[in-house]
Image 1 (cartoon, rainbow, N blue to C red):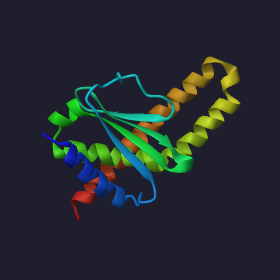
Image 2: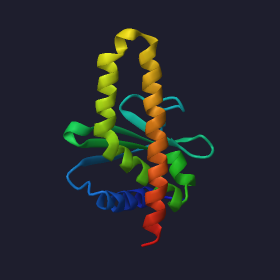
Image 3: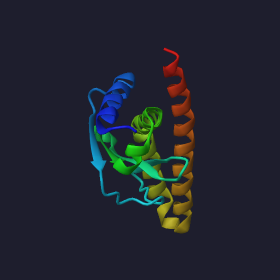
Image 4: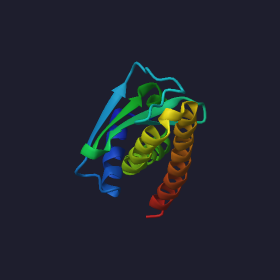
Length: 148
């Protein structure tokens, strides 16, 4: 079982690893979870565990380097420290990628939104690619960090 203190400690560790010192990162522990498994918006990212429970949603305002992580405390209470650390690594990578993702979202909105349902396909594609790349790189980075 992980605690809020564990999450805060590991969050600080990964903030240092990714050199995110100048960013404003808010950790918001949610006892009442308002998200469902389809709750991602264009500015939010989520990681699902093996049981498909939404664990963390990160909202980004990359131009101002402001990020909020909403943490599902029900998940946290049953998560291992390894689960928590992998999730934090994943979410911090989302923070690093957020300027690029925001740029591509803006291009889709400006160039494709007038085409109708095609823009939804592009937004879904971007979300899927973003999650796939982030998950792959997070696994790599996390595994490498264990070797230190």
